[in-house]
Length: 169
Image (cartoon, rainbow, N blue to C red; front, side, top):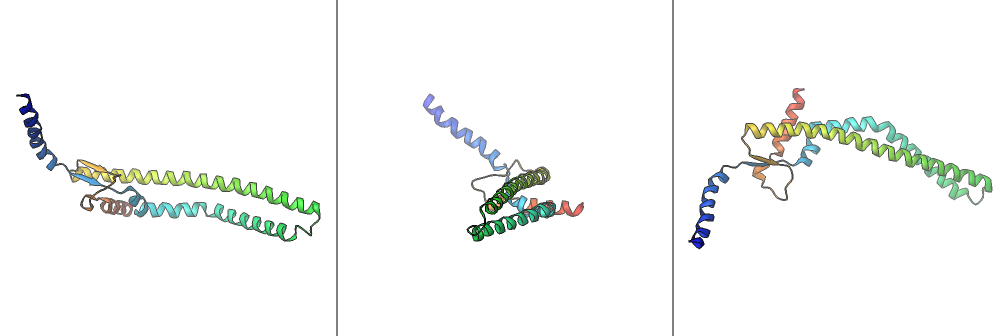
């Protein structure tokens, strides 16, 4: 009797589970596309560019001064007095240290602000995804997958809803 039960039981379970799986509704959202293509992401990018523009220009000016100093040392280093050459090299090294520090601080501050802005966008996108899931009766919506069928892709719908939410504000 046990061998027969081993064959029949899985078949019965498969038959019982099949209708439940047929009603299971799955969706997929590409989070990277949402962050890159949503109106909020584009607005955040412009805001960050404007916010960090002055510091970026300052770094570019320091970089040009460093290049000028380096060219001057390389070009005139042989003909300069030893004390003048050392003074120029010291000036170059101090300016280079200052440049490296400011560049590191710039990157850290920019990354921090980008993360803050993206967190807000993800939060809004997740609210919209939940609304779509509830109104359209989705059982599962995933944001990362190795493979997904285009027919379950909700990314465009989420981006459009984010755009509509941005216009409504």
